[in-house]
Image (cartoon, rainbow, N blue to C red):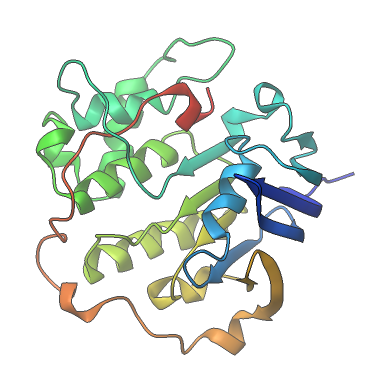
Length: 259
């Protein structure tokens, strides 16, 4: 039996005593791409983080490739690529883009880099247009460039499932179009995707449907054809360099990467 990439049933999450997700049912069959949309505070990012075991569920059931998310260590991390919405700062020595992307190849239980890890990391950076910055510290990069490094870190595994939380944040229109082409290619090769988006923009052609959240509930599901005319990303960042955004350091903590 071919298990779906993601399956939830009556998924509920309470944070600080308040309901954030209320009875969410979601199935993403293998090879399908789904957008999660809704207003700020509707529970989009919480849904993703719950699926990854970073936020505990209060009730219901959720699994990835048949593994229950209540046991994060049992999840098939080698098959999952995750791009968080924000990249938390960490201390220590300056970390280059290449070093960050290589960490995407560290998977439990064997935290050891595979052969050709550096070549694979450089290839992933090239895919997001940052191969020329491979040896530069991430702390010196713009917010949009950091986001592209995070995407490369997810892509380096060639995962069966990509989970992206607002991947267009701080990335200009040209780079969004390039990222959409990368994801469309992966989609064509059978990869599954779950993306949190404010609007579809360049990503519309690669998506099968959209799940609309309101107040932590599934308000409706719509086929892409119903939403294909959604507004594109912010036109004020249409060309040139990425939006400078907030400069920080990529998180490499285990609780963010799911190692």
